[in-house]
Structures are given as C-alpha cells and as structure tokens.
Amino acid sequence: MSIFLGFSFFRFHRRRIKILAIYETFLTSSKRQLHPLEIGRENGMHTLEVMKVLSNTPELFLKVPRSGSGGTNLYALRSSIVVQSSEAVIAYINRLARKDRILYYSLIILVLAVILMALLNIAFLRFWFG
Figure 1 (cartoon, helix red, strand yellow):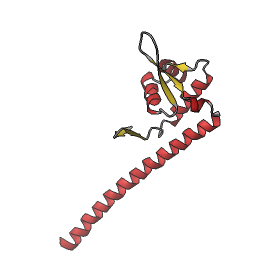
Figure 2 (cartoon, rainbow, N blue to C red):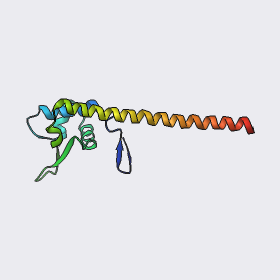
Figure 3 (cartoon, rainbow, N blue to C red):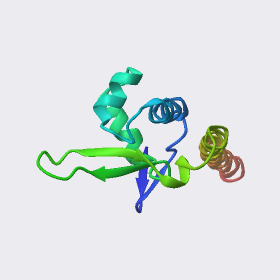
Figure 4 (cartoon, rainbow, N blue to C red):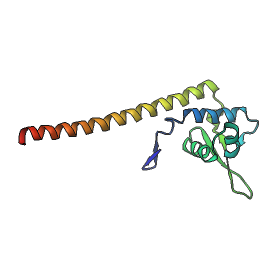
C-alpha cells in the first residue's frame, strides 16, 4: 500500500482472502508454475490485481522468468511453502494479516492521539494566554 525506504506496509491487511485464493489455486493446479492470467481466470480476479498480490508477497510466491521469447514471468510457490502443510501456511498467512491489522489500527490511533493532543494544547494555551 505505501512504500517507505523500500518497505511495503500492510501487504496482508485486506488481501488475506485473495492471497489464500491464489495459494489454493497453486495447490489445486497440476502445474508448478502459473501465469497471472491463469490464476486470475481460476479465481475470477483481474490480472493486474493478481500480479500486485504476487509481487507484494515474496515470502510466499516466487517470480520465475520464462526462458525463450516472450519474456513473460511465471509465478510459483516458494519451496519453503511447498514443503509445509496447508494448515501451517494458512495459519502463517492469518498471523501476518493479524500483525498488519494491529499495526494499521495502532497507527490510526496514534495519529488521532497526536491530533487530539495538539487540539488540547491549543485550547490550553488559549485558556492561559488568551
């Protein structure tokens, strides 16, 4: 969502369902490498949305350059994800989504607290010096 010094924040927040759907597509497919167009057709998602999810979650999905002409990229599950059970991967995705959600709401609360403190400080200064 936002990029600051190369870090991407809130990658799993509100994308958990899409990530899980793409993961299930890789599990049910007979091929190890899939094109984002195939994944989008299988899940009913737009191809650009699939590409964004795949590129923003490198800990799950690996970009595999296609050899030869065309230059299109395929995606595959990382080997560390393939060897784990489905329940463990789903729990991992849910844990990362929960961490992103906690960070997101903590950041909102922090910004609101700073705004509230600034307003109270202005009211305090007007009371004493106004």
